[in-house]
Image 1: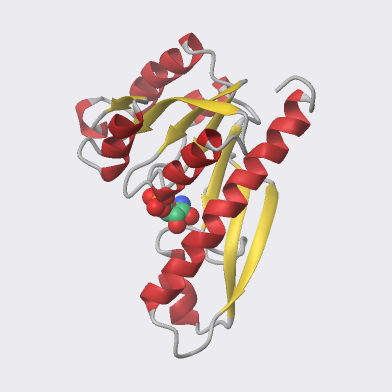
Image 2 (image 1 turned 60 degrees about the vertical axis):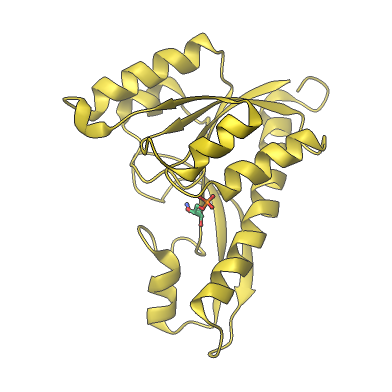
Length: 195
Ligand code: GRF
């Protein structure tokens, strides 16, 4: 059984999708801890409801990223975490966590990377008037939204779609694609028989 740490800053619907896939046995894993930089976010309420431990912090309470990442790293090592799953975590991962979990950090981003990196990818796509958008799951490296791509799924949008409709469709894609990709990564990293 592989151990996951999910990082989230907001709504937490991807966190829930992963937890539900675990509960219905689609994913043989356990979320050991939720890490959040937003102590009042909905993702934390979800963790409490699931009975999942969480660590919430405010970056402004620490002198630097490496100081709070060192604390997180120690927690994750103590818990024997196999994979870090970023699910709407709105901070760039620094050297401390990247070194501690090299090749073991995944992110999901609501665009067909390398298009529309960074914040509000859906807004950027609407602004650019593109007809096909999508979702990417990728490994995390030192550059924003730039690590090796693991999976992508496209979504055609019509000019009359509202932002809300687009977001809903993107989220649905994300929930399936993330779970499927985490499963595949666990198989590739830890072999079918042992995870
Ligand atoms: C998702 O759109 C994800 O792609 C992006 O942040 C959003 C998080 O949504 N990285 P939620 O908090 O999981 O609902």
